[in-house]
Length: 85
Length: 159
Image (tube, rainbow over all chains, first blue to last red; front, side, top):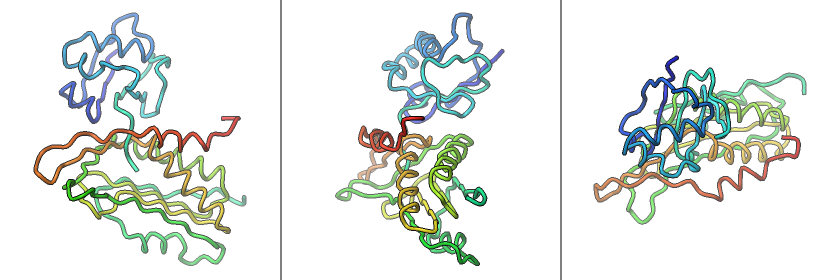
């Protein structure tokens, strides 16, 4: 199953695209696994996800923690801490 | 509470009219005793800022503000609630965000508006990028620890 990944703010700029569809390999079960796997995909990902602890994640448009399971996620968004308001 | 109110939530590029938003909440009603509005504006510091570019996550921005508004409605006896957050390029002096909270008494309206702003800052998916007056591209505004702490003070033990 293909999963849609969306990036915002400096995560988007560093990765160099606003979104993409990926096939998640076996073993990528949690948000933390996803960040680790993405980081290994190339220099731009390494650059964006250098400090995974600061990356905020939403699954299907709801905030989740890094231990959250990603099975069944249609849309996973990665972004820096928010600065609205 | 008699019935649950439905908050008005808008994420938009256009400006808003504070007086019109208050009127929309209070028109034709005699039961509202307090209206608290908070407007957040784009602020310049020493002429260095040309504009802020507000990026947002369409869909989630509305959904997350809706979740925060629903929590406010659950916690305080509100009679009306409007939240508007702008996106796109906003120049110093322009509006960014509006919260209008209406209640029978002032305390609930003050507290709900305060709570909403604290949560919007730390949980609503918006990001500000600076455009400098000298034409150079500024960086992304960094999140403040103080904003997270401000949101944390509303946590109750059962949540």
